[in-house]
Length: 127
Length: 289
Image 1 (cartoon, rainbow over the protein chains, first blue to last red):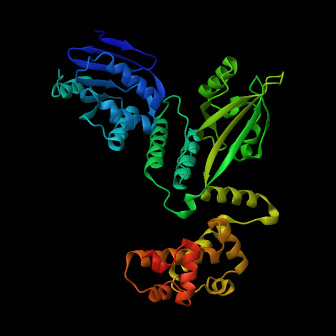
Image 2 (image 1 turned 60 degrees about the vertical axis):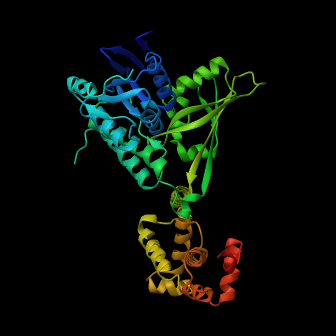
Image 3 (image 1 turned 90 degrees about the horizontal axis):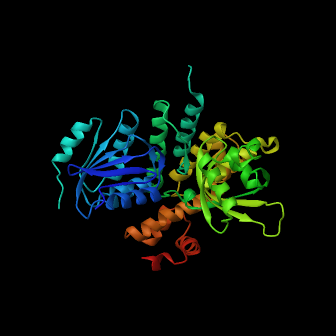
């Protein structure tokens, strides 16, 4: 089972039962890209549900349909999502995303990686 | 007051204005994050996406759309050889020389790839730079003339324009023409007061326009002309339509007798009301219940 995958828009790997999802620099995250990225993530999960550390710091903006897709379909096989952001840009955009697209799994925004991991520890992997 | 980044500031104010006018398709191009205005631009883009999805066309003026067809004749070097009049309403005149002026870099790459690979039988989402320096994503088709030796292409796209936006554009064109000058900012309040006057008097037949003009301290010609420009219909048409809408609500949602409905909606008689109702909705008010 491959525990790491990568494409033009992101890199994803599993480490200590946490799924790390790091976006590459993206000007606009649109729906086709969001679909590709979900496929990429699922390709390494072996149908298990993981807590996800999602690093959004390289994303400039996302289309509404891409955000809705990630909040709904994009929540499959995830126990929780910690969005890792930078103040001010991705903090603001991530908060906007959470309030308008409303993900299906517990999702929170963090500027501190360790706090994000603490949050994910409360939503462990489901085998 | 001094704004160090005027271009970005202008884009933000234009997008806010577009949103306030119900135009949710336009976006600000943000390629890098230079300052907090970039973040505000992105949040406005995201807001436009949310509004586009969540706000239905409530007012009848917004329910009818017009199409603006954009046709650009371009050569292999992406120089624009010719364009239709629809293009001039969206793009800055001196930008209509080369596609590089009116498309973002990613879109230019898409067009170049389509030309090189000769993939002409499909549509592409291209991001166009509009007059006000905002961007609009449009589904665009690239067509190639089979028999032409010079490799000339047609880019065509269609933008839907809400009726109120269309009337504003018409108004703008009229304002540029001295013979038919109409000062919107000066007369907007007047037309608004006429609108409220009409809405407050739906329970009575329409008075002659000169009489209404007297009551509003203006002249009838200005009222007639301004109302048509802004609302896209004559005062009488608007008044009749609104009375019938109110009548329909009373007919469908209440047990009010039809002769009372006719009276409350400003019709002279029940038969007059029934005829107007049937003409507008296709059924008699008694059958509508």
